[in-house]
Length: 397
Image (cartoon, rainbow, N blue to C red; front, side, top):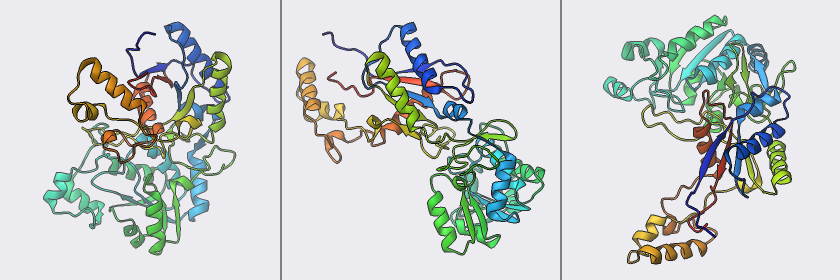
């Protein structure tokens, strides 16, 4: 049998435009099989078929409107003065949510973290903060003080001054607005005891601190739109977290329970090809941009659903460690054979072993989801399904 010369391959799979009510499992299965026939490749066991969360949510029809959000916020927080703290700076991810929140309140006290938001969008350059003698960990700034010290700061990539943009947006919805800058959650309690904490990955800690310091009503974004309002969509687990702008007045929510979907695609492929593939739904990859310092993960998780074969983390040996240490005296076929034997004989759990040092200790779904996010892109590629082949191969295959 000839030796394989290719390792992992990631392919974007073109699909029809998905609409509400479409049979997504059938469409994804057909699209992958047609691509395989068109491009002349075969599916293999443990290939991974990944669907972007947006087509899953679209097929589910999981949307809500500004008015739905406003009603939910008013019912939960009373409709008077509400603190909105630690939102990310994003027209796509948060602006429409903020419209709904503002419409459900008389006044918003908007508290922005600085120098950047949670996912790395810069509000003010850290060098400017150092020069001003400001301590971001403890100092609370008013909007006037922020402008006096730092002036206008437009986002490097979007050109938007988010302080002005969010303030204007709140006023457009008929609410008063006061903007402050702070990194300690309890700073908001000087202004109101009713709070929506909009942070994603730190939300449990933020809520705990607020409640321990006298907050009366605290809801995370994951608790807004976590049930239908007037027949709207919802997400029972994540609420507005992971949502994206759909139109100027609606958001597409993160997909609801979709384990059955990934298992159905897996079954379809097995029925049609005899191959047992893994299947997952993915959203944002989890990686950081070195120039803009933006950490990509604005979704609550990379993968909301996946088949059981994708549970866990990689269990890999570092080839360069073996080559430079244990087998430093070997070369050529002798070296290849020694490394191959080490891989075949490796423990099922390499945690803490020097020979695995430097391998990536992350969940398989986070690694594969990041690969898929980079493959599918976020623009006009038209490949919302990604096929990853050879991910579970190693040097011996």
